[in-house]
Image (cartoon, rainbow over all chains, first blue to last red; front, side, top):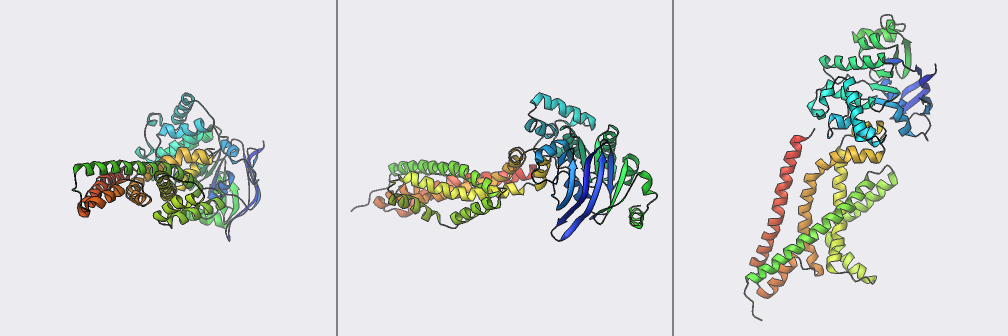
Length: 242
Length: 218
């Protein structure tokens, strides 16, 4: 198997501050990876570098055959293969749920309205919100909005999905419904890179867990790594988290 | 010379001026709006040089009195041998003036739409232009309506300046009548009332829109 996402010695600075100090990571097709770590550890930045929301100073990033580090990269082609879901949902408030999902398939892939509508219905069913097609985002709960955001990404049929702390803005009772959707996706074989604070999700769903600390990949392992930290930093992180 | 009495015919003449005031306002607004939209796009360009160049032009226009722009167009073009009709000169000057202000008003509205909306659209593989057209502008449009209507009031009042190049709109019509009737207070009072009758409903509409769009906003 070859890696669909590969980071090699990635360095990234914001001005004088180096946030990624040589990050290397490979994600195989069908793998779900949870990236954990303190705020400021660089985990979200690493994720944003994967679909070129941030550009890197040195190193290599290859995603689905796209050289992301290459300044001449066709960013649109990359983003056809990579979906991303944000902490703040970022749904389009002037469009209904259905229109939110149909926008990119119609605009970018030139699908006919009827085809796109069918695709939207399918994606909505997958996140359990088929009956909300005609609602506007502001009429939905946070958890529902986030599930629509996931459906919107899925409708573009990406090869890889990125999740950037997608439950951090949600009330505890709403995180469950979003995590369940993500778990289904992982079981369905979607390649996922998930930056999260949800240790339960990391333990239960992720094939591997990546612990980042001070801009570096500090520890990598499976679910048991959380109970059995090898480094004092992860031990301290886990102690704080519980 | 004896003063003529002020008659209903004079009011009719002023009403004719009102029509020209409205026509000039519409001209300024439509063409200024089209040009202003173009300038707004330059102001939010991805390229720094384009942003700065358009900013400089906007600042220059905003820093010059409309009357001076009007003279520059009317007399300035005359020097180069273009004899421009007063309505054309007034229309062009008002267009330049409106474009500079509308561009800045609308740029503010576009930039008031959260950046993350752009990001989300671009992450769905939309181009910058597609994202602007389908995601950003529809949201900015709602924000833009109240200040735009408010600016229309400015435009209507500013058209009175066109009287100095001999364009017979409401103010010029009042001036002409005053020259023969010498009833300044009455004549300009009526002109003022006409302006108010045009502008006040616009202001009221702008206030209503502001309230409505504010409540419904996400």
